[in-house]
Length: 229
Image (cartoon, rainbow, N blue to C red; front, side, top):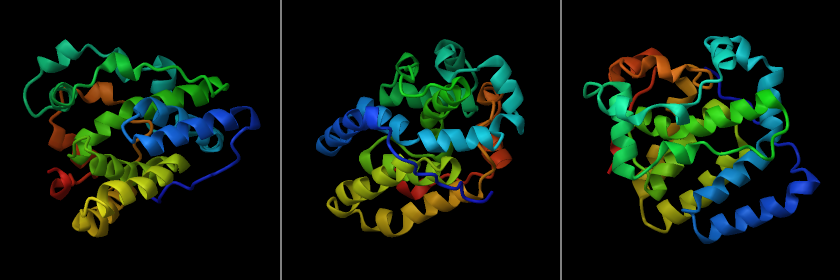
C-alpha cells in the first residue's frame, strides 16, 4: 500500500502544556509509556480526523469493527493461552506474558479526542501496537520500539512516531552503537509497513486461531528477524 500521508496539524492550545510535559518526561525516561500515550494522542488529532474523513471504517473489515466496537483489551488472555502454539492468539499471549504486559493496561481512555469515531480509531491503533510487535517479530527493548514505530508510521501516518523514531534512534541506536539497526533495520521496518496490506481496520479477533505465518502472508508482513536480539 502507499505510505500513509502524514497530517501534522497544530497541537490545540488547551493541550499544549500537557503535550510539552509528556514530551519532556519521555525525553527524560523513554520507558514512560503512559506519557508516550498522552503525547501520541494529542499530536495525532489531525491524522485521526483525516482517516475518518477518508472513510477508513468504510473499507475492508472497518464496518464490522465500527459496528462491534471490538477492543483487543477485552479479549480473554486465558483463551488465547489455550490456543495451539504458533497461532496468532497464542503467540500474542506469549508475547504479553514474556514482556509482562497486561491487556487491562491497554484499556486506556482517550481524554483528548472528542469525536467518537476518532476516539475508537485511537483506541484500536493503540491496542494493536503490541500485536504489531508480534507480527513484525521484535521485542520491547528501546531500539525495537523504534523499529515498530518505523513500521507503524507507514501504516498510520501518526506524526508522534516520527518524534519517537528521531529521538529513539539517537538514544537506542547511535549512542548504544547499534549501527546495523540504525542503517539497515529502520529502513527495512518502514518498507515492511509500506508494502503490507492496510492494518488499521484488520479484525484481529477473528484470526486468533489462525497460524501466525498465515496471518503474516495475508497482510504481506515479513518478520524483521535481524532486529529480534
